[in-house]
Amino acid sequence: MKFGGTSIGTASAMKQAMRIVTEESAKAAPLVVLSACSGITNKLIQIAESAGGSRLEEAMELAGEVRRHHRELVETLIGDAGRKAALMERVEGYVAELEMLVKGVDIVGELTPRSFDTFCSFGELLSTSVFSEALRDAGHDAVWLDIREVIITDDNFGAARPLDELCEKNVSTAVRPLLEQGKTVITQGFIGSTKDGRTTTFGRGGSDFTAALLGAWLSSDQIQIWTDVDGVMTSDPRIVPDARSIRVMTFSEAAELAYLGAKVLHPDTIAPAVRHNIPVYVLNAHHPAARGTVITDDPALLEGMSYGGLVKSIAVKKGQCIVNFRSNRMLGRHGFLVDFFNVFARAGVSVEMISTSEVSVSLTVSDSPKVEEIARELGRMGEVELEHRVATVSVVGDNLRTSKGVAGRIFSSLKSVNLRMISQGASEINVGFVVEEGDVPKALQSLHREFFSGEETSRIFDTPVQKRG
Ligand code: ASP
Ligand code: MG
Image 1 (cartoon, rainbow, N blue to C red):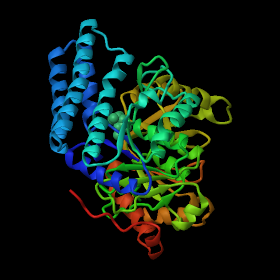
Image 2 (image 1 turned 180 degrees about the horizontal axis):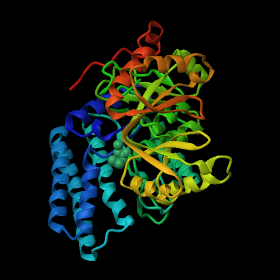
Image 3 (image 1 turned 60 degrees about the vertical axis):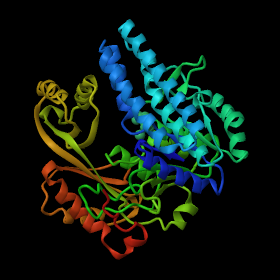
Image 4 (image 1 turned 45 degrees about the vertical axis):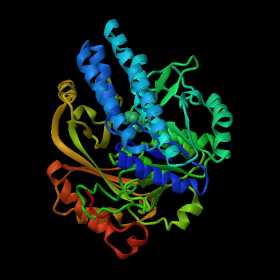
């Protein structure tokens, strides 16, 4: 069970997460992976940067905020006086270490990737310490585990990768026995350690990856990612008010959606789960009764959850720019596109959607000042035109591959929208197009009405989420 920052960021959120964990442990002892409390990793990064930039006072001030946040949690969550005092001391210990690091980095005047990772690690160390003690205080058989003794990584600080064999062995000696004894194990996401004991991190958002890895090494029957939305949605609920949560989807649909801008688990994150075919549940900690979304390739599970529906989700990515390029020199020539794409490669800009004809190419990239630079270079090879403030919209579903008439339905529902570009993904499970940003609501709402308002969809998708907050 992995809980993200918003699911444990406050005392009431922690209480809610404790209820969810307690309920699960009635079935079997779970392994619980936590992120830092929401906002804390950002704060730690600020602290690191202030220390590295010789702004000692600012760094110490922010460290004080980290202390206060966790002290308040302890104050509210722990009843037993002895336990409270001990936990306060532990929080104090971590913050003292953090402050020592601040001073050290300030003196040296240099923030290395290695010390940066140590800064970041305090968020998870603190959140898990508080959470496991709160569970114990409530009479739960919980143990705190320092994941740095289990997840051994390479020394690529900031983007470390686990040394699989070693980790798997550690999991079977240090984690599995605890679970078998019926203990709920509470541990940190995101962090690990090199062989010689240096703290590393997987990079931002790395806790989901930790959960997927541990689930795979333990051959768990499922991985639960508890977050603050009702699973994966049919579209962005801020733009499409009657967006629903998708009950079940395949790994390839989830991956495609993640690449296309939807808020889904990043495909690399769940790769360990995919390799071991472990279903991943995306659930809402603020709304545990909602069924959430299951991501799986298991035919029985897909069948049982009435997998179906033509379109699974409509993703949108704003802040894009179209690059239109035209040159007669392309006609019948070979090698021209190599030079063309090299311009993007040299600028370090990733190309997203592409559409070509014999003498022209249109593509989209994330809008940034680099685009003008690229346009200047391309201008030497042909005519270039940029369209800023556009968005890519992608209609995704595994069943698009085998169905007829989908394109017709897509484009007739978009009659009143000006399409700037069209492309069908080579994966054949998405049809994408580009519209002006101002047209995004109209496009999304029209498509959503076309594909998600029919009778048949009600067994595949959950009812619209209630408005909350
Ligand atoms: N706390 C880390 C971050 O914010 C890891 C995570 O939340 O997954 O990036
Ligand atoms: Mg997170």
